[in-house]
Image (cartoon, rainbow, N blue to C red):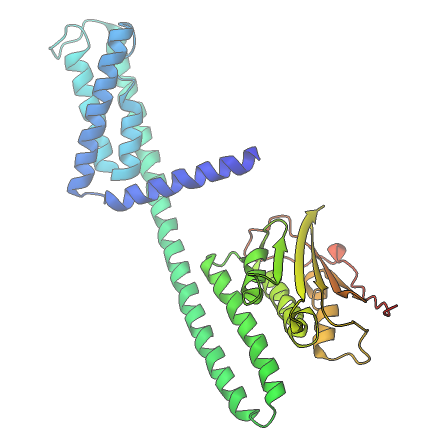
Length: 350
């Protein structure tokens, strides 16, 4: 919990600095105005500090002012703040006051130390500013490339759908099944794109597939887990297949039928349970079509497993999926030691 809070705070601070850098371009009038503001703020702080403690260093407030100005406004404004700090402290705080002569050796050493440390601060802060700017530019280009690829993928899927509609116009059932699966993948693509390529949440995937029924006939319970893209696509296909079969033959084909989708996470394993109620009597299928093979074996490539129970009250499908160590990563390795055995259990109706 503490690490999550720290990451959230870091993200907020990074976003604030990034926004400020956009409003304060290096070398602009805004940059020098920001430097002037920081100098005034540091001077007021030192006036208050010396008033509270006459032995305090009159340069204390200028260290963070130099660092902040360089980080946000650039190397020249940061150097100007350092020079202004030296002159103001020298003339306004160090004996004799209002003179550029110095009586105390410690004041000379304080000015020399401040000048040296300010040089290091300006150099380091400007390095990190340029590094942050380069990373922001690379992130912008990455997002631009992702949006362009997503746009091209949508066009390709639209072309594929058009070809399928023409080539399979004499086989409406096959055509409808293929197009519906393509639409499920397209919907998940949009969820992943909206999440900047990180993946999609389990609740969003389920709501996308069950949106026609959520108001009164379907409920979704449990934690909302962010799945990497490969996992999200697989879960989307399985939920789509379950929803389609339920609308044709299961609970959703009856006026009083209902569906409950529950999720839980323990020991880095995501467990999803699809349970149908109020539908027609359920019997194990006598043949294994593509849909059943997809449901029973669809999670194997990503190290998961499925258990299907054909109970008299309705179909129950339990899906187990080993989550990666960092579920926010864009790509995941494949570890054979983390596979869960796929089990298909068929119970005859009693």
